[in-house]
Length: 263
Image (cartoon, rainbow, N blue to C red):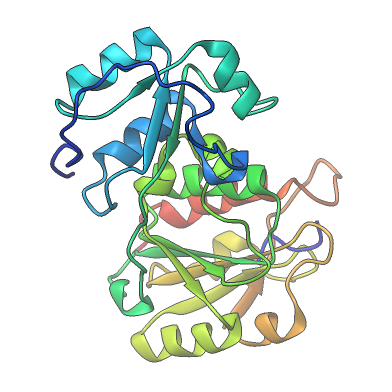
């Protein structure tokens, strides 16, 4: 990589825990589902989400879900049915067709001193984006910005990798990252693009102001126009001799550094 640049219970009130024959409804592609206990639980706890469309769970998980969310409709299934629905997924006994989240506008993000936003420029691997969302939530980032296109949907493997962070940190989608950076600059944000070829180090580039950390894809790094709309480019120094890090590892380091208090 050349650059690094709560809620009321769900409102469905029918009885829970009933076995439903698999032939009664089409189950759709796995990409439309959440799976994994933490991802599903976070989605159900998120007051901003619409009620879930459908929940499938093993008997043990169904009992736990209905204990936590009285009135929630859960279709009780066996683990094999979940495995058939979600090939290769570590589903942990539960799958959810989530309700929609409301869109997030850039105006949502207040440029308070020390605030950090993460912007991803064509980072397309769901596992990496999910891991970056998890790190962003862990280090107190106020939000994440993705493109409308060339960015994965916040479901499936991404949601599993994020371990609930999809529902713990606001994610804005924009058409054009360069224009978004201009808008954020007008609001008082300063953009720091992560670039392995930059002269400045990330530590010296950060000044404690409201900061957008901009990270590019592992293959080609930041695109030229996106880099040109950053106030400064900076690198993560690597004295061990490696030229690059996986984007999710680099993002965790950058978010940690950006989260440290500065004068």
